[in-house]
Length: 196
Image 1 (spheres, rainbow, N blue to C red):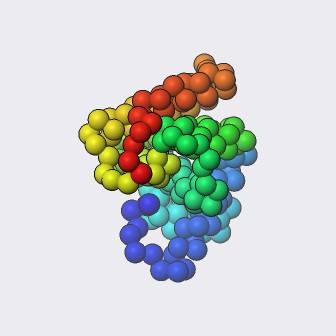
Image 2: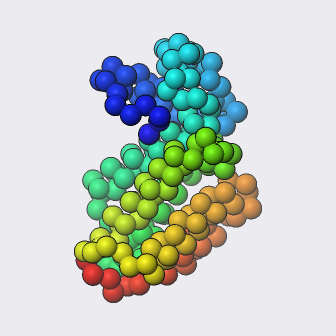
Image 3: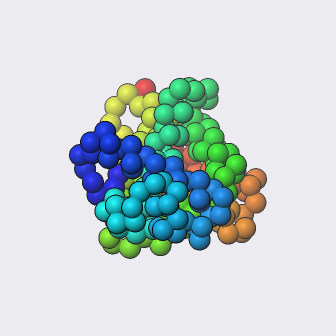
């Protein structure tokens, strides 16, 4: 979330317009197309208001990533996973997310670049991205108990692989097939016989 904690209905609607406008601009032109003045115009808010919600373009695009992860989480809940083991379900989840990013590569690039460029002032927002990513992974696993320290370590490796493969794909260093295989390989670190 942004630095604004308790939003009124009107403020939440304004925030939604800002995120939607930013998403459209990023999807159409990537990172460079998201300019604060254009976001303000596209969303129908004053530039000063936009800066009160999001102090910088990086804050804004990290919030877009949070929003996209939230939508992915909702979609995954509506469309249950079919794989039988926890690791296979995590792989299925990440591959679904990857397919969605492939449909909007400029948006994917803008969000990933924002996370990479984020400095300490955006730490809380970037941490929220990690928390949301981990929640999606944990939901896919369908654990019946708290994850052990070893399992949390495996989940962190899966998260790191997810981020690294996205960066590599977006930089044209990894083809799609390699991204898919790397994600499946990392997900094999999750033991098949977990309580759930």
